[in-house]
Length: 336
Image (cartoon, rainbow, N blue to C red; front, side, top):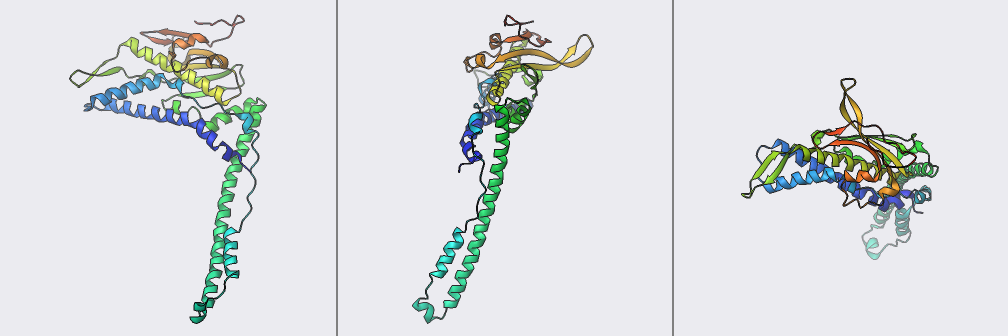
């Protein structure tokens, strides 16, 4: 009988494929970017410019990759694994060889029939040990299968009942935000709120390089300070791209149709005089709307206009503090 883990193996590979590839690209981009910052002299100007551009692109296109939707209805139907029975296949073969053994003329001539029988008996014992090892391996495999089945079945039952208590467990099990965390962010969830509230601690602006790299006509590497307008434009796209990706992963893994995501950062509070963690962007994203967007071609910042959102952004100063977005009775987009 097909077990849950066996049935999910190809499915799980599909679910994780885009995530692993995205994570690999993000890690490689971050690694190369850090190398560029440390190196004083770079011999391969073309490669350096390519790496710089690849890094800039990666932090603005996080939203393009996402896990496949999980088919919880299919998972809940997978049968429970059955405990393996010990089979004596090798022992039976060895035993049959002994029972069918008939001394040959040479056995009789050299008087080694007893030795041949003793050898066949040893082979039976060796075959028995081999069968034992196979059975032990099957038992370990069964234990793993059963553990996976119990976890996923519990999660699927919780999803079927739309029980928010299992939502954190689902995200812990599938870990869909691992590649985003490579860029230094943290995510927390409030599944008791309506809509579900997600708090996303954005990267500080230091994730954006403050310089541009270009290759001169002579083939040398040119490095100049990036204009503030371009710097904050890239940062805005990075934040908005991350929020879209978070929403997509939430919809792919959880039985929800609406989320509110709040991007928070450490910003000076003018009232207290202290740097505090405050919201700089709050957006309410319906699953129906995000599924209609051409995510490969959208501008992440401009795409916020498709949703109810609060965002104050200045091209030369960046984000400012905003309140959480709310849905009014008229369902119109609200911005500060």
